[in-house]
Length: 297
Length: 93
Image 1 (cartoon, one colour):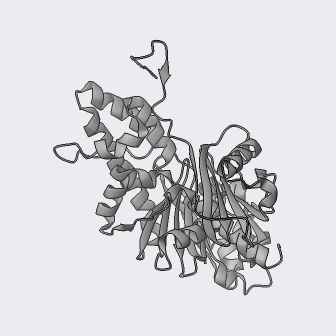
Image 2 (cartoon, chains in turn brown, blue):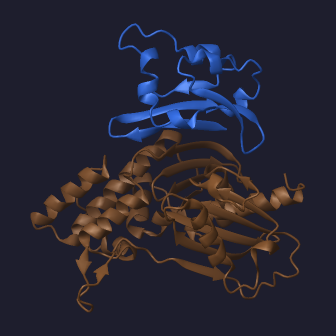
Image 3 (cartoon, chains in turn red, green):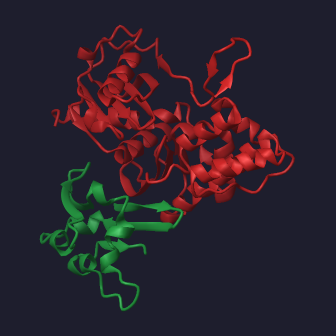
């Protein structure tokens, strides 16, 4: 933790990313026949996405607290905020993510693997075949077909190396706002060797040693981004990478890791016009629409 | 679909892969009883297929739970792999 020089005694949390919501003011939901939602309660963040007849209408992204049902409600309330819509207007809700069984207002729970594939298909188009989701505390490698159905998947949730939580630890260690990490990682004269990628605790310890040796912050950041990218590529190579390739999750917004993954794979990733962090909730909302149309089962 | 259950950590990669396209053709579900640890269960997946999966409680411990079936030397065929008549189960280590 560091002191904010402008406010004596105030604590600045560099790992804390901005929570936000958005809705499409040009989309009139009141005439919508199918209003559905997906709520993704992850271990670190929770998202809610609302669709009106399959079109993206609103979403929110918040930090998951210690109470999963409360986190789900908070995400949903935030997505609804300012829209004029209420929970009662939403006809079918799918819960997904780590806390999917703890979404009290969900009609059904669906795994995050299936939801990410479906959401990724919507966000990146039917040509996407490999989706890498770098979540808060896990990493998923998913193959899907042109309809967003999963054909192969692999998830690693045993180790924080290669996850958002690892990046939060480093942001705090280096006293760098997490949103700035990606760009700063490229402000180096040459790419440094990666720090240890086998454990966030060991990587942090190694980074502390490098700082004491006189390494500038940007170089340490670059070394960690490099390690994270390598870690994730090792996982991806287990199931192979088929084009087109896309990245979802919070780390997708970190150019330092994304660029290094692309370089190591020799493949560029597709870029979405939507926030990549909502892919799971978006997939859930799409499943909700399909289930609603099938009679709600 | 190929479902990979397990993990990657500093000691290596440990995954049990179940090919659900093959799994759905099986009516015996012999894997459930073949595993001495009871690691397999039958579920209805997100695509409404009845398939086997590794129980949640075992997924981060497969290296250790599968240990008794994988002695260092003279390793016999794995009981789950032998029991799976469609050939849907594979181990990565």
